[in-house]
Length: 115
Image 1 (spheres, rainbow, N blue to C red):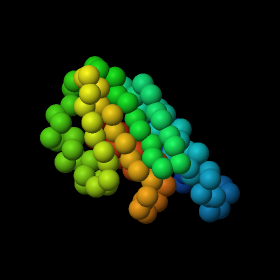
Image 2: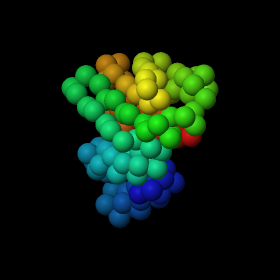
Image 3: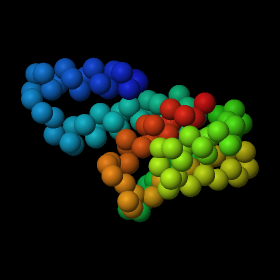
Image 4: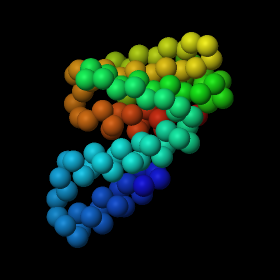
């Protein structure tokens, strides 16, 4: 699964063959999608605790960003994203509290707004 379209295609195909998919399978597919996108967008480190997940973007990817546009786009996805720009590196954290769905749904949207 390399992009959201392939995720939808695989999900539909599996649903057609096996019926309604278990949420664990969907989350696994979203993990694969996130990993593919994260590599392409310059994520070099991911830290996860029981309370939050943080992604670190390399300097090359971070320098391409318009900070104001990034903040605005992330706020539209989820107002709880915490964005820091330290030593030419974007550090973006998403707390798990108050999420309506699994955090991967938000991360995939977040990674798409990152240039």
